View 1 (spheres, rainbow, N blue to C red):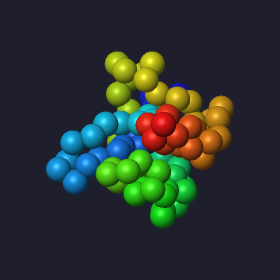
View 2: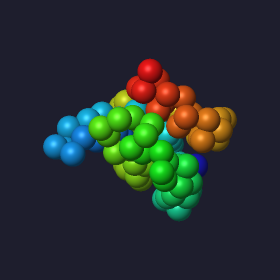
View 3: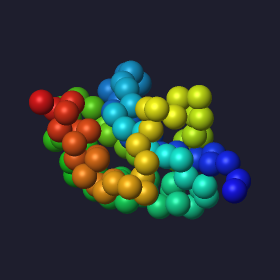
Amino acid sequence: MAPAHYGVHVEARRSDGTGSTLLRLGPYTQIWLASHDADRLNTELEGKATTGIRGFTVTAKGAPFDVSDHESYTDPYKADVAALLADAVAGVSA
């Protein structure tokens, strides 16, 4: 099996460009799978980005999978990514 090279990062950014990664999903074996989940998460975030975490813009984007940091990733195939997103945003908002 070919190695997985793709991930999805959900990031919270301030207008000055500072921020952090709230959630990392991966590995994905194909880029279209990562893009599909990123699009799905961005749809979930529409209208919630400014109210979910005050002062931050939250977005999901495809990113290279960092195999050396695989512990910080959540397996997207064994979880509901929308529920993971809600938990990540709620954890920062609290």
